[in-house]
Image (cartoon, rainbow, N blue to C red):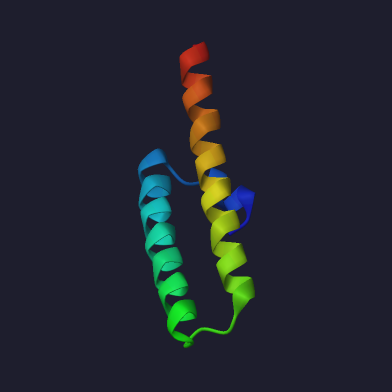
Length: 67
């Protein structure tokens, strides 16, 4: 997802999306280990999505602390 789409989501939705992304990452890693998954690019994109979500959540946390 793009950062603009992620910023439009609420904190609860972002947390849910983060949990889903971690689960997808686990499944991709498992499939890679047994030789079912050959698309390494999907693994990279899921990791980047996780990083984006965590960054946005942290930005919101810092903004709340400043107020």
